Structure formats: C-alpha cells, structure tokens
Image (cartoon, rainbow, N blue to C red; front, side):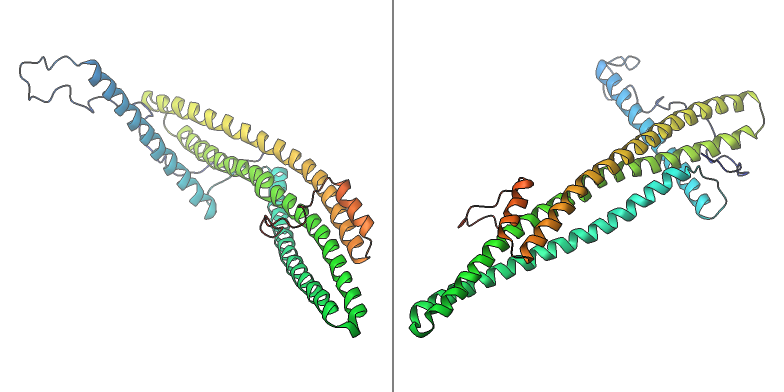
Length: 303
C-alpha cells in the first residue's frame, strides 16, 4: 500500500466534530401559561433526542461528502495523493474485463438458443408437411416418408442439443449476474472506503501542519480518531475483496470446466449425428428435457 505526499491545502472543515443538539427544540410554546415552561415532559425529551440524532447524521454526511468530493477532485486534477494496492487493483481490473467477455459469450449463447429454437420449429413443420404429402402422393410415398422421418429425428436431436445449450447459458448467466456481480458490489464498497480513507488521511495531515494550541489539539485528536475508524473500514473491505476474488476465481474455473465440456460434447455429438452420445451427455450432466408435447415453458421462454 503506497500513500502519496501530503497536501498543503487548508483544512476543509473548521471546528470540531462535537454534537449540536442544544436549543434545537424549544421547551415550551407560550400558549399554555398555566403549565411550567421550565420543565419538559418525556415526549419533549424524546423529540429532542430524535432531532439531535438526525441533525448529527446529516452533519456527518455533509462533512463526509464534502471531504470525499474534495479528495476525488484533487486526485483527478493530479494535486492529491491516493492509496494504491497495485496487486489488488490489477485483479479487480482483470475481473471487470473477464465479466465483459463473459457477458459477450452469454449474449452469443442466447442468440444461438434462439436460432436453434427457430430451426426446430421449421424442421418440425417441414416434417409434418412431408408426412402429409406421403399420404397423399402414392407415387412419392416412400421418398416423402423417409424425409419426414429424417426431419423428426433431427427435431429430436435438436431438442436434446437445445437442452444442453440452455443449461450452458443458464449457468453462465448465474456466474455473470450473481457471482461476479456480488464480488463487484464488494469492490465498489472497497473503492468508496478507500476514497474516504484518503480524504480523512489528507485532512489529518493538513491539521498536523497547523499550530499546536489547545483548540487545535482537540481537533487533531478528533481527526485522528475519525481517520483510524476509516482506516479500519478500508482495511477490512480490502481483505474482503481479496477473499472474494480468490473464491470467485476458484468457482469460475470449476463452473466453466463443467460447462465447456458439456457444450463441446453436445455440439460435437449433434453435428456428428450421434444420438446416443448426445443423450449420454445430458445424462452425464443431469440435464432433464421437458416432456414431449409439453406446451410450456419452451427452452426459449426459459431464457
């Protein structure tokens, strides 16, 4: 982890981080002179406490947003320093690139599913047409008949292939939209924590360069405590990202080894006309086809 040089800009927030709930809600409205305006009931105390908490939350959010925006602009314009974990950031960039490529494979897989489904529909209709002509054309009954049988066989093998491709696409979709996306969500949290960490680090460095009077010592102690809290958060999320990246890589290899083997065996068996091998491939991966004649869902509709 490398930190850049200190900034020479002035602190972005003057004053400490203390609460500010005093005097926010009056203890009496003056409309009921018979009541003791110097005493507050339980309801007033609760309201004052809630208002104070909300104000503190808004104040902290405002300070944090201001500091982070200032840090982000400083980094973009080359004036500020940022903490960099070169190895981790390289892994994160590799994950984003891998996700883009897998999304392309997913899109192509869905297109293949659609084309196969359309082909099956055409072959099924053609087989029915041949079978009908076989009954009505005695002179060509045999020729129409074996063409009808061929189309039916192609439809059967096509449905088996479609089942394998659909399973392949479904697994890639889960890997991309759930597994990878979950890791990238943690990465986003880590990057936000890194920005906060650097913002409060810069703030602490600037305060450290100021005069050491009584008031400044209090501000410095408060800044040090806030910086430490953001540092702990940053370190924790950095560890979480490293662990998730490791498990994601292991899971990706396991899933893709199975899916690529399935895809290869199914496609090879289909175009070789090996019906037995095609069916064995689906059995090997525990893929169940929908029953013949089932109206829904179709393989295309399940996408």
